[in-house]
Image (cartoon, rainbow over all chains, first blue to last red; front, side):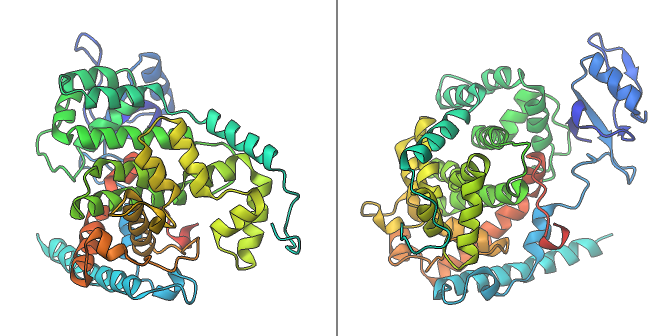
Length: 118
Length: 300
């Protein structure tokens, strides 16, 4: 359940917690599907932040629920020669590549252990 | 400029300088970022003072709350107020988030002259790597490293946005085998490191940050001892390797003497790389909060 700016919400998202007015009255209940019309009203009411429910039913931010791009980039295996033009690599660059490959192994191992947990 | 170059354009130094000056004037750091830096540097101010300032910007407030509630901080209880979030994150993280979001905003352009997501992914990754390296190399001003890392290639964004014709000529020279810096100097008389240095100087950021940006491809030019340029030089290389990017400038790297200046050997370099990779992995939420969608090459 994470807050997100109303202007960034895409129609179809589901509220994880109720939207209250300045006096604490409920304007929209948790579980409300935010249609384009409701989103317009939220803007008109100056409700700038809402919390959303994730697609899996858990309270997660819809944006954060997407696959993290950086994690994907970090998971790739890359040969040294594709990064540096021929002749520009060095011994230290090779150490960095080896150390990174070692980290990837440990990291993948840790991830798999995590996934096996009930 | 060599007269034989097939891509040479007539040297109009003054016109190029005018273009660069105008571009530097156009991109000003938001006043809120400067104000937040001032408040966070003042030991008499507390989280509530920072919260009061940030509350004026709903989009940024939402980002600070999202970051405090991200998996990285792992709080079971929801962090609901800005001042709580600032206490949880710490001034350093809030300052980095504010600066990074501010800088990316400043360079937002409707014209797709370069790959925005890819550019900022590399810049933020370099900033994170630089912060890790500066801490491990016991640099006296480790907080400069993040800023210099974030801004190290900003000259490229200026060239792409404000000199698209020249950017095309530079690209042609690169395709013909020239290094980026070399091609930039050939076409516009300055490289992106110079232009980036000019921008942060105009922003009034500390001189060591401007020097680090200016010298990040040739850190041996800096004064004796480890410099921020050394840190950025290594951070740039590590970020390129970890996120599998092609080196833009031909880097006969790392430069001579870097290991003795920063104080690493084979074993500690390997440890640093592991720490940087772990730090980038933990920062995955941070990249998303910034709205940087780092796509793998297959998705582009």
